[in-house]
Length: 105
Image 1: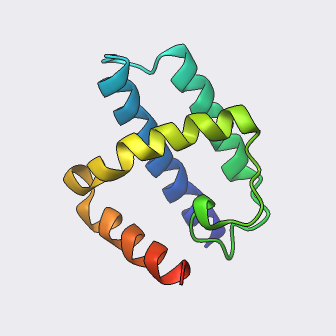
Image 2: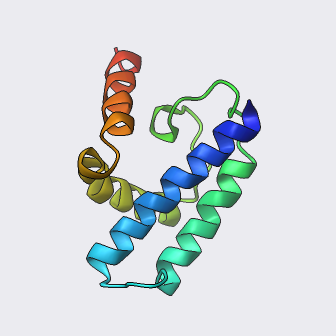
């Protein structure tokens, strides 16, 4: 279960960072150096998340494991890519919205 969850989370963060990099930094074949660095950092955080079994989304986590500069970068990516997920992954985006609203009550 954890391996599948990790795999899906990595796929989603890869998609969101790639979308951000493509649209904001005008890349095509690969990520720019900054986005690639952010992706590697995010993968490392996902791999070592102590709450992976029970967590839903990093934004709902009480413990933020990203250092402040990387947290700002990933927030920028999520703020940009999140709304666009409705176009690219509508079911995932809707599921995220529903779970986020339920969990924030």
